[in-house]
Length: 89
Image (cartoon, rainbow, N blue to C red):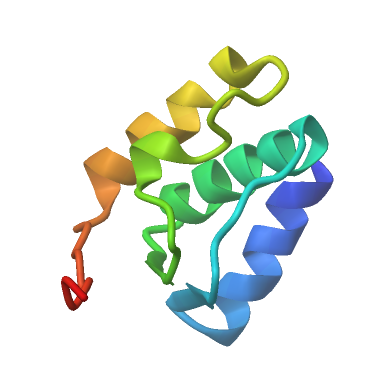
């Protein structure tokens, strides 16, 4: 069994909502771990709340093998409501 499936099971035992502050993807390892974890969380009907200074479609921009992370971005855009709270200043 995928270890991240077990992590998602543990999260689900504790809560239906998972919050990430300053959601950021810096390398291929982070990208692959987060992609799999998000997939497992969404399979369990969990809710993701995240803050970030980067719009989802720009996560891991110019990253090594970014194409492997694009399905995760599509999943975020399909499963989450993206709100821009920029003050414009």
